[in-house]
Amino acid sequence: MAGRGRGTRLIAVAGAALVLAAAAACSDDEGAARPTISPSVTTADVTGTTTVETTTVDTTVTEATGTTTVTTTPPDGTTVTAGTTVQMDDAPPDVEAWLITVHQQNLARLAAGRSAESVAASGDVRALGGRWVTDYPALDAEVRARAAARGVALPDTPTPGSDADLDAVERESGDGYDAAWTARETGDISTYLAFVEDGGGAAQDPDVVALAAMTRPVLREHLDLLAGIRRPVEAVPAGEGPVGGPGRVGAVAVAAVGAALVLVAGVGAAVARRRP
Amino acid sequence: MAADPDRRRPLWPVPVAVFGSMLVGWGFVMSGAAGPRTPPDFGSRSVIAADSLVPGEVAPAGPDEAEARPGVGAATATSPPPTELRLPGRDLAARVHPVGVTRDGVLQLPADPRDVGWWAGGAGVGSGSGPVVVAGHVRTVGGGTGTLATLLDVTEGEVVDLVRADGAVVSYRVRSRLSYVKGDLPPELFAAGGAHRLVLVTCTGDVDPDTGSYTRNVVVTAEPLG
Image (cartoon, rainbow over all chains, first blue to last red; front, side, top):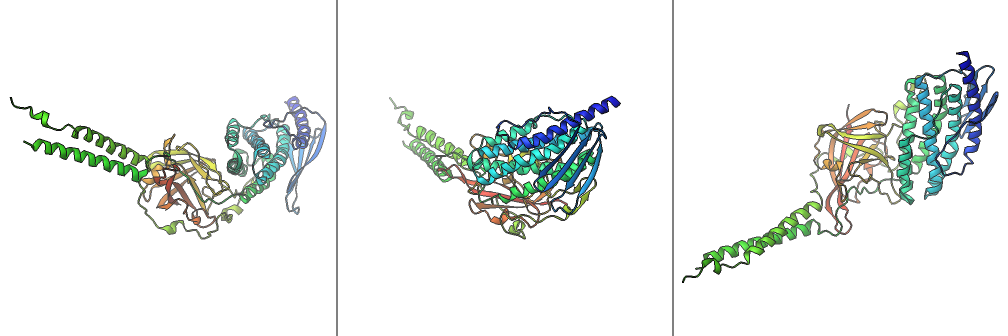
């Protein structure tokens, strides 16, 4: 069991080093492929700083003590939640599931950001895509560090459903893409925020608490940004009929002519019967 | 030799009657394809009148948003999006997709008329204020009759459920059904703020033979249960 704990720590350190490198690398990655991040670095002690626009998180992973120390500075800079110390141990299933879900959300948002940067018609949506590409890898760096410290293996890709949703958005073009992208991101980030708020069965876990505190303001800010570019509804074209048809008036007129012909035929037949 | 009386009868009424019958049938069918009859209105227009009538305005924060939850901090300000619409009284359900608005103000809708769209710029389900807007095709040429065609038959007091992505079910009760000439939808239908309400929209009226689009919208408004 002790050997397993030491192995877990080594993995944790390697993962922490990786995520700090990946956080820096992701924003420079111009590749169009959906995001994947793979561990490859091993080191004894790692200290790094991740800044997500309004929240600063300092992370220290120390092999000797087997602890991860996280310091979070909220946007106002007046309150510092410091010294959250997490023992390196195997994560309970709920915590593992929480970390995987959040990681896959980050990957999905990163993919959406890259998509918007290259496909969106408007500068507003492209700019949001750029924010996603900056912010979500930074958030994910912390998720990966804590997952590594807890011995949680994270998937390399978003969920298949998420990929399918993005494919559907990318089938639109121009302004239609922008509207679909904005709607999809609003829905998905709302879902992501609700998940982070709820915490599931892991709400009391120190890692989950710290990550939720770090993630929540970013998601709220992104929802505000999305709300800032939304447009009012002016028309709801909720149906389509045959083009080139007679219309209701024309159809009724034709039916009336038909009825008149039937009537004439009936009268004609009756008159003919009465003739001697 | 007496002449056959049948031979003296004219034959023209027969083809004329057949042709006339065909015209009646064709006209009947095309009249149906030209769009559903606009259903009668019920309920008050005041149901849709929000306190704050600025289209696109951000809804004020609800009182529950400041509440803290143990372990993870403040409660969410934005509820998860709806994933399913149900009319339990009719054993009817439709998938819900988030939809946006194009530059010309047109609400995008799922192409499949069995599915419906939730306006992502509107209120969240159970959010405490503002309109949750859900719309869907009444009918499409390739897809047939849509789920929301049932709005043409819905009655006051019927229950409509929205299932959110987190599994929560929020129920609403139908209060009004009003139809509008397309293009004359009142902005307050979609305005942020005011009482929380569900706004369901589809099309009705005649089909414009030049464009294939319907001439009217029917709007059903429902209030939260409980």
